[in-house]
Length: 456
Ligand SMILES: Cc1cc2nc3c(=O)[nH]c(=O)nc-3n(C[C@H](O)[C@H](O)[C@H](O)COP(=O)(O)OP(=O)(O)OC[C@H]3O[C@@H](n4cnc5c(N)ncnc54)[C@H](O)[C@@H]3O)c2cc1C
Image 1 (cartoon, rainbow, N blue to C red):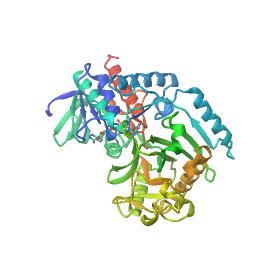
Image 2 (cartoon, rainbow, N blue to C red):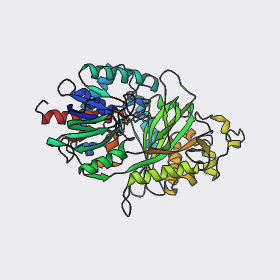
Image 3 (cartoon, rainbow, N blue to C red):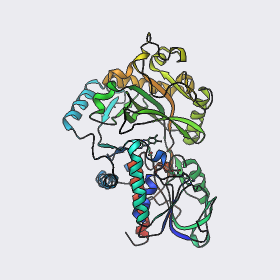
Image 4 (cartoon, rainbow, N blue to C red):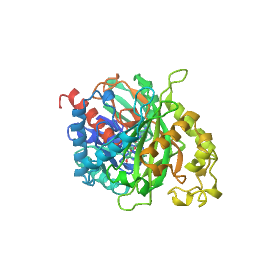
């Protein structure tokens, strides 16, 4: 990386947001994509690779100042690119008759809250599944075509600092040297969100705190969830909890999948994925509780870090906590000795992530804030009205599952911040919550740059 070279655009982050930005710009402007990882694809190289093809999932249309029609068209364009690079052509969520049967079922069991809202809502969505095993190939092909179109990648290159250099250029500091760029697309993902927030503030970028999603990963035997996942791969249920009136939702369902440990900024979080070619006997999904804060503390990132830190501490240090639902409902901790007890019904489901180093059987009501535990427990009870088997005592619950996409950036509709020529995109800047949303963001930011250059 030559220090004297000035790029038209430096893209920070080679996740879906950065890759789609580079793809849109390549061949028109000189583009360098920097990523601290030794590979492209971003968070887990599109781990699991569920592509949500609905404008209401993984995107906030109000935040993006976008109509549903525009989002639909942009999502279809992003999806075409994935399919052209080898994503499985099967689309879930198109069987109207069976979806209507599920909507009917929900309408029978839901109730109005005191505020007049439904306590359970099912939001059907079209989805494609690449699978962790096959998503890597799609990412590799995409990287190849972006490179052939003229963009460059500098991997294993962490951007340590950004400053405004001479002539209004941005200077990006890395261990390999400094480079200059006329534009920046910052797409640092959730991993880089905290770093970028500080860097952006140093440049005078306006930010505000948004909500954070804190929840748990639930694992059940696949037959419990199979009837719905055959119709809706990743069913999106929305809930309003009875005690606190808070909002929770199901997220990231992995039929035949695995519960995974995610190393995040020094913490251990839980996540899940599924392979396309090899299935387990279980299905996992997250329940997320959206938390906003007002006074005296608004820093939701810091709050999320503290919750993660304490949950890991409660697991014995750098450890997840796992609890059988039977134990949670009885108000007792889970223990290694009884974790598979047939007498308690726990032999019905063997979790894919077993207690051992880094995963401690325990009590999530000690590890997590009380209100969140109430909401998670009540959400499972609400969900069991629609899918009774989720309330089986063998159901396993893992914490902490936290989605750090809570810092919001004030931008125009092409994601340019108040600092001219500094564009932001993707999960790390609170503009998306998923692969397709992030990719769409990347295209938007790139279009914003092309418009400024008179090349759109
Ligand atoms: C286990 C797992 C499973 C998931 N499953 C799904 C799914 O099925 N469907 C779905 O839609 N979403 C899924 N997601 C979420 C999805 O991965 C993200 O929504 C998406 O990757 C966000 O894209 P992004 O481009 O905004 O950021 P990222 O993909 O996070 O990419 C950001 C990149 O920036 C790099 N970076 C950060 N800071 C710096 C720096 N200072 N210098 C250089 N590089 C930096 C990071 O290394 C990273 O590669 C999953 C996530 C995980 C972890």
